[in-house]
Length: 123
Image (cartoon, rainbow, N blue to C red):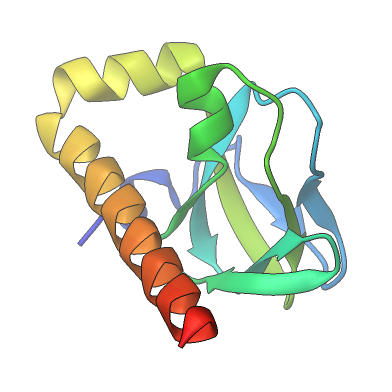
């Protein structure tokens, strides 16, 4: 479980209303986010491919790859997210190895779910 409480009350936390975008597809990806509370839909076009909830990382691929966003993220509900830029990301990886493991687990779960969806669609 991610230590959300460490980030919960920091001044950098961004408060979103339902319908607000955290980021949009094809934008430069300079920041990833930790969902502190609420629900964030990850969108491929207009299709919701996943809903991120408390403790989930979003936007990590663009930060790691230094590539444009591959999807959009929009608040489904009122939500709070904590931004993690590259400098903070590098610091967290160095100072808290479990952070890197949490991130890798997030990526692995998403890849497994996507693979399962593709397999079901072909069946």
